[in-house]
Length: 298
Length: 299
Image (cartoon, rainbow over all chains, first blue to last red; front, side, top):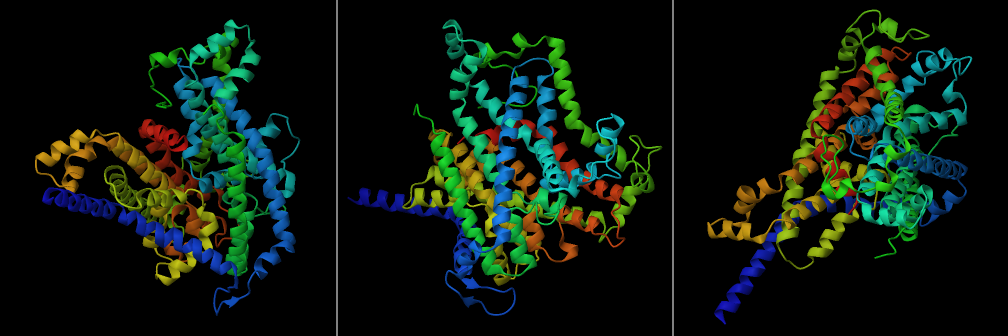
């Protein structure tokens, strides 16, 4: 009896100690994540200027989103950007992974080179590309004209298409190594005997790629797609730095428009409402993607 | 899932993997080298041009059309970078302070939490762990507006400490997850032995467990460092005073410089200074970084 009591007190004390270990993390998450999340929803129901008193407006901010042409435009542009860049990142990453997945002399060096830009920050990478594509001092136009590919400097950011293309180039350069790495790790854990079996069954190279390798890579492919879609939906730095949303708001992304509304136009409540809409969209998109690509064998 | 980018020995069971898609069956060895080298050249071209241009004299770096190679090596761009704003050293200092704070803070907080979640049972344990992981689902880009208000309330706006705390918080889901797994893999006997030797749980953690979870710690530290060194949007929003800027935000001031036109050599010198620590640390510790990246992604 006393012994049982003592153990239960001891285990309760041990429980309290365990909770104390997690406390610093919980405090930080509460103050800098849960409170802001709750505040985000609260703010979205107010007209909330930077200075002065917030005014309760109910769902007015959400209703205003429907009539905001710029939001619609930024949503459409972000979707277009996502739809273009996701297959590019996947296919190029897949190709690179196929190229360097085997253990052979030199493969390690090439992997490192292809992956290296990933550790360079988005801002530095964008400022690097801002210079690379500059029509007067940038080396890309210089190279293209020297090689006779273009007659004169391109003026990448003068047109919406050119600006979008420039951003895509820079983003592919920076993140395709990450895609490569995720796909490569999947390919290396596909057991060899499964593929041998497919070969014995007479599957051609592409048939076995399609029917054997891709299904086994399902999990990794799902991850690559989720990362790429969520990353593109949240795109900001590349556009802020490379195109400034221009020409004429034609490369304005959702996060960029939220940033402008909140911190340039000082409509914090409206920015919050758009953030809530963005959050809900992201959760739906990742949910649908994970559902479509879920591992059916499990 | 232990794969590394280079210096990896083929594991026996994996050497047989991906057999029917071996690139060597499709492509002769020389062709593989040519293709890989060409792709590598595409990846390295921006970095090579960056270094060559930064070493030009400021006037030469702004010349149009540009030359590929500098006429002679000049440190002029670095000199002007050093004089920009409060001086580049000042911004390196800010960034180093925030990154060191974030790294140390993340390591401490996530080690404690990982230990608590892996080794102790207490009511609400799984729920609390789920709350921390939930931070992953909500990108902080969407929380910037309210974070700004919270910072104002706590008198932490425009402060490097505030920025550091935000960075630590958003590193926590992945870090706590990795540390919990690291601790969970340690056999309980190790802790029991420490307890018999008279160690309390904290002494056991400090003297015995820490050595065992070191690879996890290095990964967590690397992630925290890279994230905080490079972060742009939160720093842009939460810091308002020029002298508090971190390097990525400092770069924006070089573009909108007082001189009107962009001084390209100076801006690119700033880019180089910002990226070099990341590249060097990555090359030195890529083994841990890549392992953690895959472990973190494939959970």
